[in-house]
Amino acid sequence: MRRALSMTLAAFALACSGTPVQPTTKPVIPTAPPKEQLGKYSPAARAAFEQGVKALQETPPNYKGAVTAFEQATKDSPKYFVAWLNLAYSYERLGRYEDATKAFKQLIKNDVTDRGVNLALGRSLLMTNQPDLAITEFESVLRKNPKDLQAKNNIAAAYLAKSDEKLALRYVKEVLAVQPKNVPAIINLGILYMNENKLPLALLMFKKALGYEEDNARAHNNLGMTYYKLNTVPLAVIEFEKAIELDPTMDEARINIASVYLDYLDYKRALEEFQKVRARFPKHYIAMIGEANSLYGTGDFEGAVKVYEESFEINEKNTEALLRAGKIYEEQLNKPQKALIFYEKYLAAANPPANDPIRQNVQFLKQAQTLQPQTTSSEPKPTGEGAPADGTPAEGAPAEGAPAEGAPAA
Image (tube, rainbow, N blue to C red; front, side, top):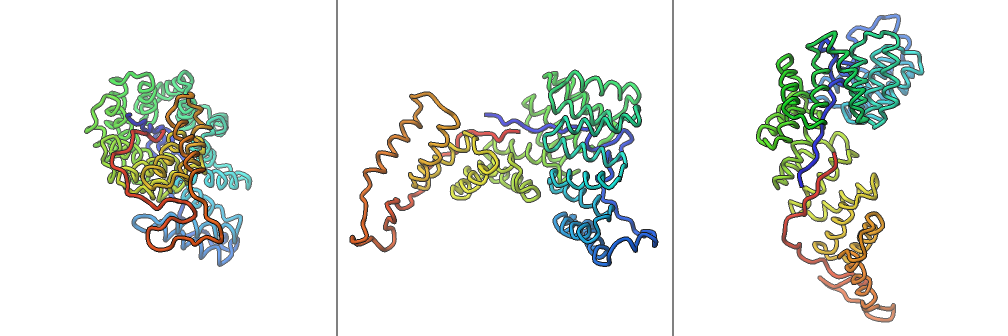
């Protein structure tokens, strides 16, 4: 089964002039704040802020360290708005969009009414699957300036996320009518063509965008998507790699290239990319499932089932993951009682037909469980290497065979 890859909406990253849509696309680091403002912040807050700045200036940037420092700065001085902006930026770079949303709302609550903050808040809302709320933020910018092309690009991106191609196209056209070389609008138009399976036109749009801005990571990622859909996989991989080179934090491109590696059974390289995403964003569900599938492919069955079980905290009804966890426990780890737990959860979630083999397997495991000999406190219990404990068979050798095809959803 070929994996569903991730498109990226252009309006998030670039303004019509090629500058960031929101101020947090780059950290806000005042080198010499006005002296009259220094008294507003405690010495501890200023020290924490400077520590956060140093973390961002590391190569590569230490976003986790920056978050810790800026959180401390805002805790010590809640009105330290530049610290809040840098905190939101650092949250975004770690994929912590819900936390970024809270940080932007805190700024707005304190009457920081910069248009960039509204755009950034909309972006974070969109990244947390709240397109309607995102549109509200983008429209608030547009109401103040009906000619704001950044806001229109972001609205187009939000409607693309809602699969409302008609309204998305309306805003894309409005931007291109004013600025024909607007790169985000061209990319969004390419995504519209891709959604309509007009792949030659999509290819044309993404190449056109790169003609104007050759270092646009999102254009490279979406060009890779188009090549992938055209079954030109080597060129797709080249474009995904280029996108990652330009923006190492672009999760979409890493997920895409990892999914290609998984398709072609290169489990080790797939695992590396999925784990890089999770290093930044531990609860990234797609990367989590991809990592589990890759671990399965490399033969690390205990590692794989551990990640599958972790994924159930986010989505306990992923039938493919439930089934895979059950099979690992039964066939590779020789723990039928654990397998039974996940098989029953699979049946509850999938509700397969009565003749489904898993239903028969569940009945067999239940019968086998009742036939196991029981020990009492008066009976000698087996000891020594390889002896069963509490009626659970000793672990067996891993079974041979590659994992069944199973794609993380995009």
